[in-house]
Image (cartoon, rainbow, N blue to C red; front, side, top):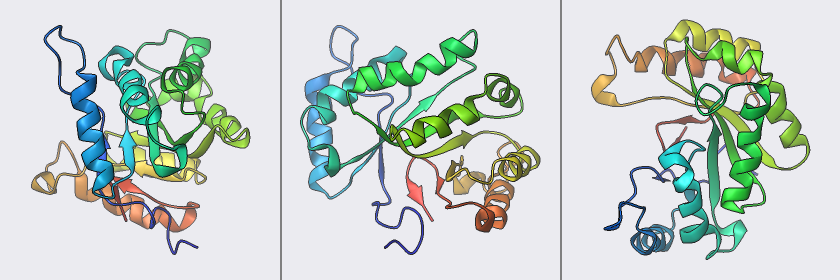
Length: 212
């Protein structure tokens, strides 16, 4: 039994973005396999990708380098739905989830995120009913935990976590060099999430790795 959400997950994540490229400009799968093997050998298990990373090639690389080569229970996989990019209506936004399942062949996602929620994108997720959609996928067993990545200020974050107290985690942009940067508001966002954590079923504060 975990004392807190994410306790059993090693606190270093493998971001499947900006992967090495081969001479043809495509992701170098063989080199990515070596990186994945080293990561797994070190006891790390958390892999993070997204529907829009590298035009979908990131999710395909995850399949080739990780999912096709390791038992499903040996790692955790996160991906993201970006309702404001690569979608033009509710149907196409929701289709991203099913496309990600097909690209990765993962069967389910351990962590599923609404991608880059901020002042300019939040209403899109609401208008397309994406919050309810991810809950439905969790009920079907296709998502183990759901949350969102965040790139805005503390006021909106407070509103979102108040409106959606069942969100299980939030991925924050935390770079301690920018702790007091007014354009990043890392400290303020962290403090809002910590303040509201007791009202959530769990809280994962992340920068691409799991932090608690």
